[in-house]
Length: 158
Image (cartoon, rainbow, N blue to C red; front, side, top):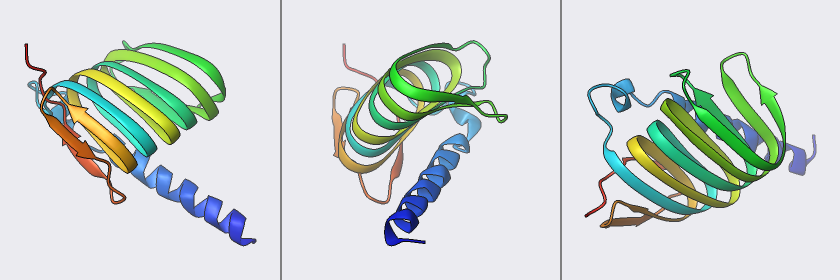
C-alpha cells in the first residue's frame, strides 16, 4: 500500500473513532437538561460534532454524519455529496460540500473536513478537533486542539 493510501486510511480510521466518541458522550445531554444549554459558533478545519437537542447549522467540505435518535429531527441538506443511510441510523454524506440545517430533540451532527462553520443553539455537548476557534455563549472563547476536547453549550447573555 502506498504512503498516500496508508495516510488516507489512517485519517479515515481516526475520524470514525472520533465520530464514535461523539456518539457515546453521556446521555446526560438528553436527561434533565444536562449537558449545558446555550449557543456555539465555531470555525476551523478538522472534526466538529455536536450531540444534544436544539438547532444546528453546519457547512464545509468533507464527510458529514447526522443521527436522529429522537425520531423528530428536521433535516435540510444542500450542496453536493453522496448520501448513504447506514443500518445504525446514521446518515452519511461522502464528498459533502454544502450546508446542513438540523433540529430535533436527540440529534448528533458531525463534519470532518475543511472550512467548517458551525452554529448551534440548544442543550448538549460538542467536540472540536483540529485547527480553528470557537465561542460558547457570549463569554467563552477558545481554540480547537489537535487532541480534541468535549465542551458544553453555555448561555448567551441577554
